[in-house]
Length: 466
Ligand SMILES: *Cc1c(COP(=O)(O)O)cnc(C)c1O
Image 1: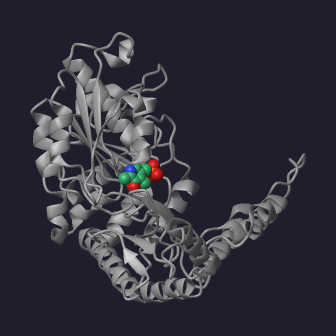
Image 2: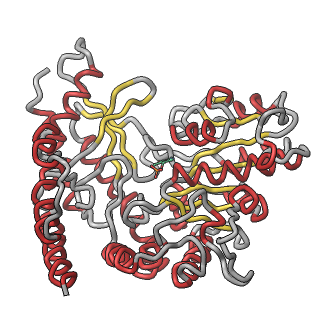
Image 3: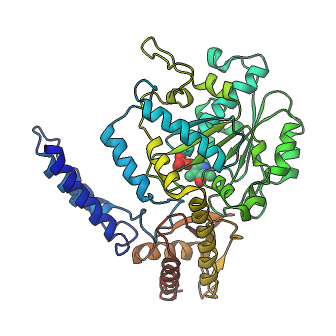
């Protein structure tokens, strides 16, 4: 059987890649030109055998791969893939299930039902909520806000799905100054206008200030949506939902929470204060491909109002024969129609670690972030810009000559850390100042990886002139 040999060879390629991860430079080695020269071959007229295709793809792509699945990749909030999740993802591809309708794959549909129950329990959110499995938090924000748009306009006597927004009562959208960029893309795609969003000032850690929200809501009457955040991408800080949600409720506003990675703090009792009150929101968007460490693409939209969720996403066609009511059709809860059966890797990730294992992973990453901050702070030329409340560490490098351009110096050191290759961390800007951002979110990261990485960062700084 042709597949057998091909898949065995592919297995060997994958295993050798994974085994090499700890020794591999954390960033890509090759230049974009080198990659183009190898990969951008003329469109072939004739095909070649699949083994050659796969072998050459692995060879030609290798230098352009980023070791984001490895133990010392601290870029963005990129978790790796838990072994069980990776294996289940392979099966999802081999099975090639279309998780559109339950009749197209009853197994995919039932697995989504199971994961949906587990996620609500893990995150301790209202158990009757409906859940959509989307491609990432960008689309989770979109899905949640589409339901919000439906509901706030329905209450104002308007059917957004049937009549669109022309002539509709205006919706006031409020978000924090530090809301994630994808939230504004969602707002834009929903026709709510990114520039119409009222931005509420944030405190020094990026948390929305309750006084600011109060002022923003003061003159609001009519349909309103308030967007809060659990886990700032720079600082890890949480908007204080316990104080903010009651303010929004006074105006009958829909409350949405973007908790791409921060929502998983709900797993850890020691972090309960950070997410207190969050369960009182109407919708929550989160990622599974970040802190839950499943392969891309995997985001989760959670809606307390099942009817609004359904009404904003419903898909109908003569050949879409809906399942009997007792089984959930996956595509009725997401913007997609045909879709990957991304429930399988989620199912495997959650089963393989269990509630305790997942909590332990989140707790460990937070502890490792504090360890990283402590080790870096030992160097007088390194400042930690944030309170390390979660898994994010914001680093500011100080040149010996403080007269110089400190921002340019920070960008330079960050680039040199990336080139050095022991670990990878990205550049960022915080309160208008350049910084390096470290996110600890990969399952294979050990304390030793943190020590080795902190030492490498300090060594790079020591030999950077100025
Ligand atoms: C990463 C992130 C997003 C976007 O998620 P994607 O998975 O990239 O679509 C949204 N909000 C926050 C706070 C994030 O960290």
